[in-house]
Image (cartoon, rainbow, N blue to C red; front, side, top):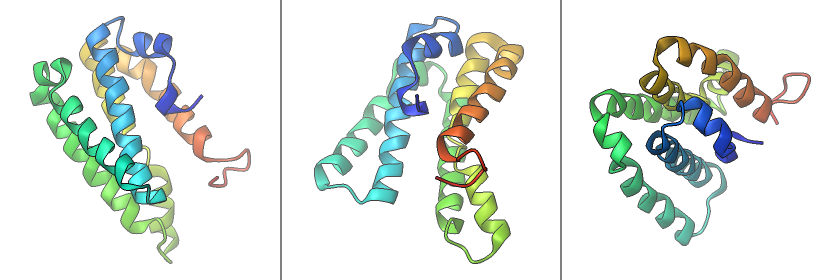
Length: 147
């Protein structure tokens, strides 16, 4: 399983059964992975336009709108962090490349923020370590090398 295809049951666990929050996370995941595909894979115009279209659904989603004050800054931070990772992922400086490898999962902060909104801090703490491990395992082999 990858984070983009997280099971509906897992999404419901993250959101404490809040269907609107789970639906928002489904849209968020498709959107941020679409952006990543634009950066990494240079897809065709149709895929790029579909990703842009997804922004309309993410930022007008009822859950986002209801929690806009809390979530807008998370979205800004995720975009900024991703820009840093893209800028440094091919750096000749080891620390920048290492930072980029770790920080490229920053989009998961939206999942953790939604978990906190739905179930409070302790619930977010329960979700956070498992989510970070999933992100790491998705992008590294058993030796810790980037895949």
